[in-house]
Length: 143
Ligand SMILES: [Zn+2]
Image 1 (cartoon, rainbow, N blue to C red):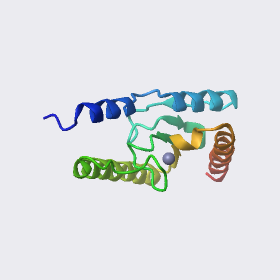
Image 2 (tube, rainbow, N blue to C red; image 1 turned 135 degrees about the vertical axis):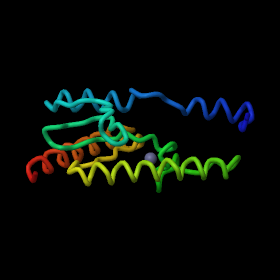
Image 3 (tube, helix red, strand yellow; image 1 turned 90 degrees about the vertical axis):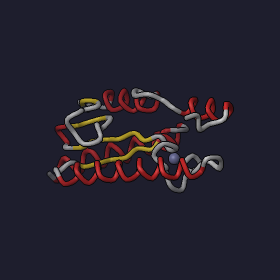
């Protein structure tokens, strides 16, 4: 079933990115440069976290603001056309995200969500990375 008009479809398709998106790669090279060792897309963990730091018992998801419906963000919104379809789709994604996070937390993992918009702009990026590293390290010490 073709649910989108041609214009809408190309707009949507341009938003679809596969794994190894640019922000995710940037984040990985930064963590690597900072001396962290990690695995990526571990299929044996709920939700296949984008980055897994076993030593710190921490997993990181890099979430696209649109696809994971980032609240309080311009990108996290229900499109006005086909809004019912999107509402259903996005709320399913949120439900799935939350259940993965709950399962990981229950298994003793620290779950960190990085939103794509938090990696935009030099200042915001630096702030995000600093607090990310703090979170990673402090959890490792407590455990
Ligand atoms: Zn956002």
